[in-house]
Length: 165
Image 1: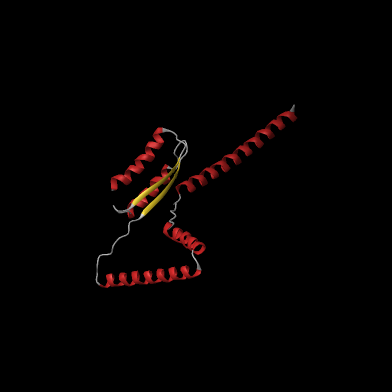
Image 2: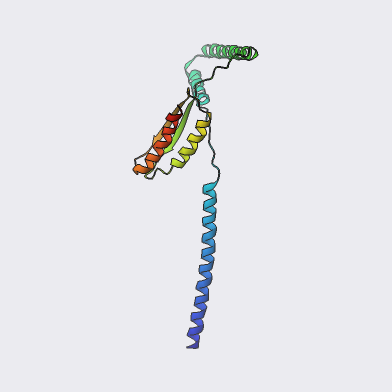
């Protein structure tokens, strides 16, 4: 009988130690996941013009003859040089610089709960700090649908763009 009491006491101590270790590990994991959620994100900017110019150059290399390609490259260099000198003259004359129209492309990959809404909000907030009335915003939306209130919040973020002009 005494053996069973000692065995029961041993089991109680072992279970208590295992539970205490499990609670500590659980607290550490939850604290680590909270830190990663509150961390600063980042925005990647890709200049699509450069990509399209590279594709155009590849097509030119395969479609044009050597002489035509050399003439085209020479004409492009001449045009770039003329543009650069015109910009220098405009800077010296303090002429107002002509701003180019920019196109911003945002990705929104939706799910049932529209969980990417927070990222969309941050991207739009960053975009609105730099965008002017002449710029365009394109949103690439991939979604199979979902909860109305979640997508309503996402649409209100898009309405911020329209409200700014």
